[in-house]
Amino acid sequence: MAEKIKINLNRVPMPKQEVEVRRRNFNEVALGYSEQQAIEEANRCIQCKDPHCIEGCPVGVRIPEFIAALRQGDMPEAVRTIKKTNSLPGICGRVCPQETQCEESCALNKKGAPVAIGRLERYVADWERAHPEVTEKPKRPRTPKGRKVAVVGSGPAGLTCAADLARQGYGVTIFEALHVAGGVLMYGIPEFRLPKEIVQAEVKYVESLGVEIKLDQVIGKLATVDELLDNGHKAVFLAPGAGAPMFLGIPGENLSDIYSANEFLTRTNLMSAYRFPRYDTPIRVGKSVAVIGGGNVAMDASRCALRLGAQEVNLIYRRSEVEMPARAEERENAKEEGVIFRLLTNPSRFTGDAESRVKEVECIEMGLGEPDESGRRRPIQKTGTEFVIPVDTVIVALGTIPNPIIPQTTRGLELTKQGTVRTDEATGRTSKDGVWCGGDMATGAATVISAMGAGKRAAADIKAYFKG
Image (cartoon, rainbow, N blue to C red; front, side):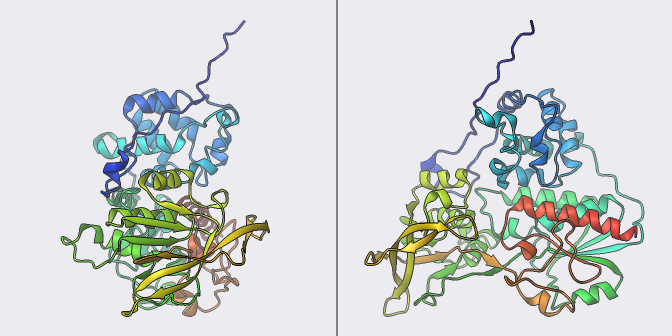
Protein backbone atom coordinates (compact mmCIF):
# COMPACT_ATOMS: atom_id res chain seq x y z
CA MET A 1 0.00 0.00 0.00
CA ALA A 2 1.42 3.40 -1.03
CA GLU A 3 2.51 5.66 1.81
CA LYS A 4 0.23 8.67 2.28
CA ILE A 5 2.04 11.95 1.59
CA LYS A 6 1.89 14.39 4.46
CA ILE A 7 1.02 17.90 3.26
CA ASN A 8 2.11 20.98 5.18
CA LEU A 9 -0.96 23.23 5.34
CA ASN A 10 0.89 26.20 6.86
CA ARG A 11 2.93 28.53 4.68
CA VAL A 12 6.36 29.86 5.62
CA PRO A 13 5.94 33.36 7.13
CA MET A 14 7.49 36.31 5.31
CA PRO A 15 10.16 38.11 7.39
CA LYS A 16 9.35 41.80 7.89
CA GLN A 17 10.94 44.86 9.45
CA GLU A 18 9.94 45.42 13.07
CA VAL A 19 6.97 47.78 13.31
CA GLU A 20 8.61 50.49 15.41
CA VAL A 21 11.55 50.60 12.99
CA ARG A 22 9.71 50.47 9.70
CA ARG A 23 7.01 53.05 10.50
CA ARG A 24 9.71 55.72 10.40
CA ASN A 25 11.61 54.64 7.29
CA PHE A 26 10.83 54.04 3.61
CA ASN A 27 12.82 50.81 3.30
CA GLU A 28 10.98 47.75 2.03
CA VAL A 29 8.77 46.28 4.75
CA ALA A 30 8.75 42.67 3.53
CA LEU A 31 12.32 41.35 3.60
CA GLY A 32 11.88 38.35 1.31
CA TYR A 33 12.57 34.65 1.80
CA SER A 34 16.00 33.22 2.44
CA GLU A 35 17.06 30.30 0.22
CA GLN A 36 16.09 27.83 2.96
CA GLN A 37 12.67 29.46 3.45
CA ALA A 38 12.00 29.56 -0.30
CA ILE A 39 12.79 25.87 -0.74
CA GLU A 40 10.71 24.98 2.32
CA GLU A 41 7.73 26.87 0.88
CA ALA A 42 8.30 25.44 -2.62
CA ASN A 43 8.21 21.93 -1.15
CA ARG A 44 4.60 22.55 -0.09
CA CYS A 45 3.52 22.54 -3.76
CA ILE A 46 1.95 19.17 -4.56
CA GLN A 47 2.54 19.56 -8.32
CA CYS A 48 -1.09 19.00 -9.36
CA LYS A 49 -1.72 17.14 -12.61
CA ASP A 50 -4.35 19.76 -13.46
CA PRO A 51 -2.92 22.98 -11.96
CA HIS A 52 -5.68 25.58 -11.64
CA CYS A 53 -3.18 28.12 -10.29
CA ILE A 54 -2.11 28.78 -13.90
CA GLU A 55 -5.71 29.61 -14.82
CA GLY A 56 -5.77 32.11 -11.97
CA CYS A 57 -2.74 34.01 -13.35
CA PRO A 58 -3.68 36.78 -15.82
CA VAL A 59 -0.36 36.36 -17.64
CA GLY A 60 -0.32 32.55 -17.55
CA VAL A 61 2.90 31.87 -15.63
CA ARG A 62 3.69 28.13 -15.58
CA ILE A 63 3.62 28.12 -11.80
CA PRO A 64 4.24 24.42 -10.96
CA GLU A 65 7.17 24.34 -13.41
CA PHE A 66 9.02 27.31 -11.94
CA ILE A 67 8.38 26.04 -8.39
CA ALA A 68 9.72 22.59 -9.33
CA ALA A 69 12.88 24.17 -10.78
CA LEU A 70 13.30 26.33 -7.66
CA ARG A 71 13.14 23.41 -5.23
CA GLN A 72 15.55 21.41 -7.38
CA GLY A 73 18.01 24.30 -7.14
CA ASP A 74 17.87 25.05 -10.88
CA MET A 75 17.39 28.79 -10.53
CA PRO A 76 18.22 29.75 -14.14
CA GLU A 77 15.43 27.41 -15.27
CA ALA A 78 13.04 28.91 -12.71
CA VAL A 79 13.83 32.37 -14.12
CA ARG A 80 13.42 31.22 -17.74
CA THR A 81 10.07 29.58 -16.96
CA ILE A 82 8.63 32.72 -15.40
CA LYS A 83 9.97 35.05 -18.07
CA LYS A 84 8.41 33.08 -20.89
CA THR A 85 5.16 34.82 -20.00
CA ASN A 86 6.00 37.49 -17.38
CA SER A 87 8.59 40.20 -18.01
CA LEU A 88 8.03 41.87 -14.61
CA PRO A 89 8.32 39.14 -11.94
CA GLY A 90 10.03 41.31 -9.30
CA ILE A 91 7.10 43.71 -9.49
CA CYS A 92 4.40 41.04 -9.59
CA GLY A 93 5.90 39.13 -6.69
CA ARG A 94 5.51 42.24 -4.55
CA VAL A 95 2.27 43.97 -5.53
CA CYS A 96 -0.01 41.47 -7.30
CA PRO A 97 -3.07 40.35 -5.30
CA GLN A 98 -2.13 36.68 -5.55
CA GLU A 99 -4.60 35.82 -2.79
CA THR A 100 -7.50 36.48 -5.19
CA GLN A 101 -5.84 35.01 -8.28
CA CYS A 102 -3.30 32.18 -8.56
CA GLU A 103 -3.22 31.42 -4.82
CA GLU A 104 -7.00 31.37 -4.58
CA SER A 105 -6.97 28.56 -7.17
CA CYS A 106 -4.25 26.57 -5.36
CA ALA A 107 -5.38 23.07 -4.36
CA LEU A 108 -4.06 23.58 -0.81
CA ASN A 109 -6.41 26.53 -0.38
CA LYS A 110 -9.28 24.09 0.22
CA LYS A 111 -7.83 22.82 3.51
CA GLY A 112 -5.14 25.26 4.58
CA ALA A 113 -2.95 28.08 3.35
CA PRO A 114 -2.20 28.10 -0.39
CA VAL A 115 1.37 27.95 -1.61
CA ALA A 116 2.91 31.44 -1.35
CA ILE A 117 3.28 31.74 -5.12
CA GLY A 118 3.88 35.50 -5.10
CA ARG A 119 6.62 35.26 -2.51
CA LEU A 120 8.34 32.51 -4.48
CA GLU A 121 8.10 34.55 -7.68
CA ARG A 122 9.70 37.46 -5.84
CA TYR A 123 12.48 35.19 -4.57
CA VAL A 124 13.27 33.98 -8.11
CA ALA A 125 13.24 37.53 -9.50
CA ASP A 126 15.51 38.80 -6.73
CA TRP A 127 17.88 35.88 -7.28
CA GLU A 128 18.11 36.73 -10.98
CA ARG A 129 18.92 40.36 -10.22
CA ALA A 130 21.74 39.21 -7.92
CA HIS A 131 23.09 36.73 -10.50
CA PRO A 132 22.83 38.44 -13.91
CA GLU A 133 25.86 36.57 -15.21
CA VAL A 134 24.17 33.15 -15.15
CA THR A 135 20.73 34.07 -16.47
CA GLU A 136 19.80 33.68 -20.10
CA LYS A 137 20.25 36.83 -22.14
CA PRO A 138 17.26 37.84 -24.26
CA LYS A 139 17.56 36.98 -27.95
CA ARG A 140 17.13 40.20 -29.85
CA PRO A 141 16.14 39.96 -33.51
CA ARG A 142 18.74 41.35 -35.91
CA THR A 143 16.15 43.45 -37.70
CA PRO A 144 12.52 44.14 -36.84
CA LYS A 145 9.88 42.52 -39.02
CA GLY A 146 9.10 45.80 -40.73
CA ARG A 147 6.01 46.52 -38.60
CA LYS A 148 6.44 49.31 -36.06
CA VAL A 149 4.20 49.60 -33.00
CA ALA A 150 3.74 52.64 -30.77
CA VAL A 151 2.95 51.98 -27.12
CA VAL A 152 1.65 54.97 -25.17
CA GLY A 153 2.61 54.66 -21.50
CA SER A 154 5.32 52.66 -19.72
CA GLY A 155 3.28 51.28 -16.87
CA PRO A 156 2.57 47.55 -16.41
CA ALA A 157 0.26 47.25 -19.45
CA GLY A 158 2.58 49.14 -21.77
CA LEU A 159 5.75 47.33 -20.66
CA THR A 160 4.10 43.91 -21.02
CA CYS A 161 2.67 44.61 -24.47
CA ALA A 162 5.98 46.07 -25.66
CA ALA A 163 8.01 43.13 -24.35
CA ASP A 164 5.74 40.52 -25.97
CA LEU A 165 5.79 42.29 -29.34
CA ALA A 166 9.57 42.81 -29.23
CA ARG A 167 10.07 39.08 -28.64
CA GLN A 168 8.12 38.49 -31.86
CA GLY A 169 10.55 40.72 -33.73
CA TYR A 170 8.44 43.86 -34.12
CA GLY A 171 9.91 47.31 -33.71
CA VAL A 172 8.38 48.85 -30.58
CA THR A 173 8.65 52.38 -29.25
CA ILE A 174 7.15 53.36 -25.88
CA PHE A 175 6.13 57.00 -25.45
CA GLU A 176 6.17 57.97 -21.77
CA ALA A 177 4.79 61.32 -20.56
CA LEU A 178 6.95 61.50 -17.42
CA HIS A 179 10.71 61.93 -17.11
CA VAL A 180 11.19 58.35 -15.93
CA ALA A 181 9.74 55.05 -17.18
CA GLY A 182 7.47 52.85 -15.07
CA GLY A 183 4.21 54.79 -14.86
CA VAL A 184 2.15 54.06 -11.75
CA LEU A 185 4.85 51.64 -10.58
CA MET A 186 7.09 54.69 -10.06
CA TYR A 187 4.72 57.43 -8.98
CA GLY A 188 1.91 55.53 -7.28
CA ILE A 189 3.44 52.76 -5.14
CA PRO A 190 5.68 53.66 -2.20
CA GLU A 191 9.29 52.59 -1.87
CA PHE A 192 8.48 50.48 1.20
CA ARG A 193 6.18 48.31 -0.90
CA LEU A 194 7.94 48.40 -4.28
CA PRO A 195 11.54 49.68 -4.38
CA LYS A 196 12.19 51.85 -7.43
CA GLU A 197 15.41 50.00 -8.25
CA ILE A 198 13.28 46.89 -8.81
CA VAL A 199 11.06 48.75 -11.27
CA GLN A 200 14.01 50.22 -13.15
CA ALA A 201 15.77 46.84 -13.36
CA GLU A 202 12.69 45.36 -15.04
CA VAL A 203 12.31 48.38 -17.33
CA LYS A 204 15.91 47.79 -18.42
CA TYR A 205 15.08 44.15 -19.13
CA VAL A 206 12.25 45.25 -21.44
CA GLU A 207 14.67 47.63 -23.18
CA SER A 208 17.14 44.76 -23.59
CA LEU A 209 14.55 43.00 -25.75
CA GLY A 210 14.89 45.82 -28.28
CA VAL A 211 12.17 48.18 -27.03
CA GLU A 212 12.92 51.90 -27.39
CA ILE A 213 11.57 54.15 -24.61
CA LYS A 214 11.09 57.88 -25.26
CA LEU A 215 10.54 60.00 -22.15
CA ASP A 216 8.77 63.37 -21.72
CA GLN A 217 6.43 62.49 -24.60
CA VAL A 218 2.85 63.61 -23.93
CA ILE A 219 0.79 61.96 -26.64
CA GLY A 220 -2.16 64.18 -27.47
CA LYS A 221 0.07 67.25 -27.22
CA LEU A 222 3.45 66.42 -28.74
CA ALA A 223 1.82 64.13 -31.30
CA THR A 224 -1.66 62.69 -31.71
CA VAL A 225 -2.55 59.02 -32.13
CA ASP A 226 -3.43 59.75 -35.76
CA GLU A 227 0.01 61.28 -36.30
CA LEU A 228 1.66 58.18 -34.83
CA LEU A 229 -0.29 56.05 -37.33
CA ASP A 230 0.56 58.42 -40.19
CA ASN A 231 4.27 58.41 -39.34
CA GLY A 232 5.07 54.76 -39.82
CA HIS A 233 3.49 52.99 -36.88
CA LYS A 234 1.16 50.22 -38.04
CA ALA A 235 -0.49 49.82 -34.63
CA VAL A 236 -0.88 51.86 -31.44
CA PHE A 237 -1.47 50.43 -27.96
CA LEU A 238 -2.86 52.98 -25.52
CA ALA A 239 -1.82 52.35 -21.91
CA PRO A 240 -1.29 55.76 -20.28
CA GLY A 241 -3.15 54.75 -17.13
CA ALA A 242 -5.79 56.78 -15.34
CA GLY A 243 -4.08 59.77 -13.83
CA ALA A 244 -6.94 62.18 -13.14
CA PRO A 245 -8.07 62.05 -9.48
CA MET A 246 -11.65 61.76 -8.25
CA PHE A 247 -12.95 63.93 -5.42
CA LEU A 248 -15.81 63.89 -2.94
CA GLY A 249 -17.68 66.98 -4.13
CA ILE A 250 -18.43 68.22 -0.61
CA PRO A 251 -18.12 71.71 0.94
CA GLY A 252 -14.60 72.83 1.83
CA GLU A 253 -12.77 70.47 -0.51
CA ASN A 254 -10.75 73.36 -2.00
CA LEU A 255 -9.13 74.28 1.33
CA SER A 256 -5.34 74.19 1.58
CA ASP A 257 -3.62 70.97 2.72
CA ILE A 258 -6.23 68.75 1.07
CA TYR A 259 -4.41 66.55 -1.44
CA SER A 260 -5.54 64.03 -3.98
CA ALA A 261 -3.76 60.72 -3.33
CA ASN A 262 -2.26 61.06 -6.82
CA GLU A 263 -0.54 64.33 -5.97
CA PHE A 264 0.48 63.20 -2.50
CA LEU A 265 1.99 59.90 -3.68
CA THR A 266 3.62 61.41 -6.78
CA ARG A 267 5.35 64.04 -4.65
CA THR A 268 6.36 61.40 -2.12
CA ASN A 269 7.46 58.62 -4.49
CA LEU A 270 8.48 59.98 -7.88
CA MET A 271 9.69 63.35 -6.58
CA SER A 272 11.27 61.88 -3.42
CA ALA A 273 9.64 64.25 -0.92
CA TYR A 274 10.51 61.74 1.80
CA ARG A 275 14.19 62.53 1.20
CA PHE A 276 13.81 66.24 1.92
CA PRO A 277 16.00 68.34 2.02
CA ARG A 278 18.20 66.24 -0.26
CA TYR A 279 15.31 66.42 -2.74
CA ASP A 280 13.67 69.83 -2.54
CA THR A 281 10.09 68.64 -3.07
CA PRO A 282 7.54 70.48 -0.90
CA ILE A 283 4.93 68.43 0.91
CA ARG A 284 3.28 69.38 4.18
CA VAL A 285 2.06 66.68 6.55
CA GLY A 286 0.53 67.83 9.80
CA LYS A 287 0.26 66.03 13.12
CA SER A 288 -3.28 64.76 12.43
CA VAL A 289 -4.02 63.33 8.97
CA ALA A 290 -7.26 61.99 7.50
CA VAL A 291 -7.18 59.66 4.49
CA ILE A 292 -10.48 59.10 2.67
CA GLY A 293 -10.87 55.70 0.99
CA GLY A 294 -10.42 51.97 1.50
CA GLY A 295 -8.24 50.71 -1.36
CA ASN A 296 -4.53 49.95 -1.65
CA VAL A 297 -3.89 53.59 -2.56
CA ALA A 298 -5.52 54.72 0.69
CA MET A 299 -3.30 52.29 2.63
CA ASP A 300 -0.22 53.57 0.79
CA ALA A 301 -1.10 57.21 1.50
CA SER A 302 -1.81 56.46 5.18
CA ARG A 303 1.46 54.66 5.70
CA CYS A 304 3.42 57.36 3.84
CA ALA A 305 1.85 60.02 6.07
CA LEU A 306 3.08 58.20 9.18
CA ARG A 307 6.58 57.98 7.77
CA LEU A 308 6.52 61.68 6.90
CA GLY A 309 5.90 62.58 10.54
CA ALA A 310 2.16 62.41 11.21
CA GLN A 311 1.37 61.54 14.83
CA GLU A 312 -2.15 60.31 14.06
CA VAL A 313 -3.60 58.98 10.80
CA ASN A 314 -7.33 58.32 10.54
CA LEU A 315 -8.44 56.20 7.60
CA ILE A 316 -12.08 57.08 6.89
CA TYR A 317 -14.10 54.50 4.95
CA ARG A 318 -17.85 54.47 4.45
CA ARG A 319 -18.28 50.67 4.46
CA SER A 320 -17.04 47.93 6.79
CA GLU A 321 -13.66 46.23 6.50
CA VAL A 322 -15.31 43.26 4.76
CA GLU A 323 -16.06 45.49 1.76
CA MET A 324 -12.62 47.12 1.66
CA PRO A 325 -10.90 46.60 -1.71
CA ALA A 326 -7.41 46.87 -0.18
CA ARG A 327 -5.39 43.67 0.14
CA ALA A 328 -5.54 41.95 3.54
CA GLU A 329 -1.74 42.16 3.77
CA GLU A 330 -1.79 45.94 3.29
CA ARG A 331 -4.59 46.40 5.82
CA GLU A 332 -2.64 44.33 8.34
CA ASN A 333 0.54 46.34 7.80
CA ALA A 334 -1.33 49.64 8.13
CA LYS A 335 -2.95 48.58 11.41
CA GLU A 336 0.36 47.33 12.81
CA GLU A 337 1.96 50.68 12.02
CA GLY A 338 -0.75 52.60 13.87
CA VAL A 339 -3.27 53.71 11.23
CA ILE A 340 -6.68 54.18 12.90
CA PHE A 341 -9.51 52.61 10.87
CA ARG A 342 -12.71 54.67 11.16
CA LEU A 343 -15.13 52.33 9.38
CA LEU A 344 -18.76 52.96 8.45
CA THR A 345 -17.89 56.65 8.43
CA ASN A 346 -18.32 59.19 5.64
CA PRO A 347 -17.06 62.79 5.42
CA SER A 348 -19.74 65.43 4.79
CA ARG A 349 -17.76 68.71 4.88
CA PHE A 350 -14.37 70.24 5.59
CA THR A 351 -13.92 73.41 7.62
CA GLY A 352 -10.89 75.68 7.60
CA ASP A 353 -9.09 78.24 9.73
CA ALA A 354 -8.59 81.96 9.07
CA GLU A 355 -5.83 81.16 6.53
CA SER A 356 -8.09 78.73 4.61
CA ARG A 357 -6.18 75.69 5.83
CA VAL A 358 -8.22 72.61 6.64
CA LYS A 359 -8.75 72.16 10.38
CA GLU A 360 -11.70 69.73 10.70
CA VAL A 361 -13.51 67.04 8.78
CA GLU A 362 -17.17 66.64 9.69
CA CYS A 363 -18.31 63.02 9.38
CA ILE A 364 -21.50 61.00 9.69
CA GLU A 365 -21.92 57.36 10.73
CA MET A 366 -23.11 54.89 8.10
CA GLY A 367 -25.04 51.63 8.04
CA LEU A 368 -25.09 48.98 5.31
CA GLY A 369 -28.11 48.27 3.11
CA GLU A 370 -28.63 45.98 0.13
CA PRO A 371 -25.77 45.28 -2.32
CA ASP A 372 -25.25 47.85 -5.10
CA GLU A 373 -23.96 47.36 -8.68
CA SER A 374 -20.46 46.61 -7.32
CA GLY A 375 -21.81 43.66 -5.30
CA ARG A 376 -20.95 45.39 -2.03
CA ARG A 377 -23.58 46.47 0.48
CA ARG A 378 -24.72 50.03 -0.08
CA PRO A 379 -23.74 52.54 2.66
CA ILE A 380 -26.66 54.47 4.19
CA GLN A 381 -26.35 57.56 6.38
CA LYS A 382 -27.53 57.40 10.00
CA THR A 383 -29.39 60.60 10.80
CA GLY A 384 -28.16 62.56 13.81
CA THR A 385 -24.77 60.84 14.08
CA GLU A 386 -22.57 63.72 12.88
CA PHE A 387 -19.20 64.22 14.59
CA VAL A 388 -15.95 66.10 13.91
CA ILE A 389 -12.32 64.94 13.57
CA PRO A 390 -9.61 67.64 13.96
CA VAL A 391 -7.09 67.43 11.07
CA ASP A 392 -4.09 69.27 9.65
CA THR A 393 -3.91 67.36 6.37
CA VAL A 394 -6.42 65.41 4.27
CA ILE A 395 -5.64 62.93 1.48
CA VAL A 396 -8.51 61.92 -0.82
CA ALA A 397 -7.97 58.38 -2.19
CA LEU A 398 -11.22 57.62 -4.02
CA GLY A 399 -9.74 56.38 -7.29
CA THR A 400 -8.83 57.87 -10.65
CA ILE A 401 -10.24 58.37 -14.13
CA PRO A 402 -8.41 58.62 -17.48
CA ASN A 403 -6.98 61.96 -18.56
CA PRO A 404 -9.14 63.15 -21.49
CA ILE A 405 -6.26 64.48 -23.60
CA ILE A 406 -5.94 61.38 -25.82
CA PRO A 407 -9.70 60.83 -26.44
CA GLN A 408 -10.13 64.54 -27.20
CA THR A 409 -7.40 64.45 -29.86
CA THR A 410 -8.18 61.06 -31.44
CA ARG A 411 -10.85 60.78 -34.14
CA GLY A 412 -13.17 57.77 -33.96
CA LEU A 413 -12.25 56.60 -30.44
CA GLU A 414 -15.41 55.59 -28.58
CA LEU A 415 -15.69 56.05 -24.82
CA THR A 416 -17.88 54.50 -22.14
CA LYS A 417 -20.15 56.51 -19.82
CA GLN A 418 -17.35 56.39 -17.24
CA GLY A 419 -14.92 58.10 -19.64
CA THR A 420 -12.82 54.98 -20.25
CA VAL A 421 -11.98 53.80 -23.77
CA ARG A 422 -14.44 51.22 -25.08
CA THR A 423 -12.58 48.02 -25.96
CA ASP A 424 -13.14 44.40 -26.81
CA GLU A 425 -12.21 42.81 -23.47
CA ALA A 426 -10.69 39.71 -25.09
CA THR A 427 -8.40 41.58 -27.50
CA GLY A 428 -8.15 45.21 -26.39
CA ARG A 429 -9.31 46.44 -29.81
CA THR A 430 -10.93 49.86 -29.85
CA SER A 431 -13.44 51.38 -32.28
CA LYS A 432 -10.54 52.87 -34.24
CA ASP A 433 -8.72 50.63 -36.71
CA GLY A 434 -5.12 49.98 -35.72
CA VAL A 435 -5.60 51.15 -32.13
CA TRP A 436 -5.75 48.98 -29.01
CA CYS A 437 -6.14 50.00 -25.38
CA GLY A 438 -5.54 48.29 -22.04
CA GLY A 439 -4.99 48.89 -18.35
CA ASP A 440 -6.63 51.65 -16.34
CA MET A 441 -7.54 53.70 -19.43
CA ALA A 442 -9.84 50.88 -20.49
CA THR A 443 -11.06 49.57 -17.14
CA GLY A 444 -10.61 52.41 -14.68
CA ALA A 445 -8.25 51.97 -11.74
CA ALA A 446 -7.41 48.26 -11.32
CA THR A 447 -4.49 46.01 -10.36
CA VAL A 448 -1.00 45.84 -11.84
CA ILE A 449 -1.46 42.23 -12.94
CA SER A 450 -4.82 42.87 -14.63
CA ALA A 451 -3.13 45.66 -16.62
CA MET A 452 -0.34 43.26 -17.56
CA GLY A 453 -2.92 40.71 -18.71
CA ALA A 454 -4.50 43.36 -20.93
CA GLY A 455 -1.11 44.19 -22.42
CA LYS A 456 -0.45 40.53 -23.15
CA ARG A 457 -3.85 40.04 -24.84
CA ALA A 458 -3.38 43.16 -26.94
CA ALA A 459 0.08 42.05 -28.07
CA ALA A 460 -1.29 38.69 -29.20
CA ASP A 461 -4.11 40.39 -31.12
CA ILE A 462 -1.76 42.94 -32.75
CA LYS A 463 0.34 40.02 -34.00
CA ALA A 464 -2.83 38.37 -35.37
CA TYR A 465 -3.85 41.68 -36.97
CA PHE A 466 -0.52 41.95 -38.75
CA LYS A 467 -0.92 38.42 -40.09
CA GLY A 468 -4.28 39.36 -41.56
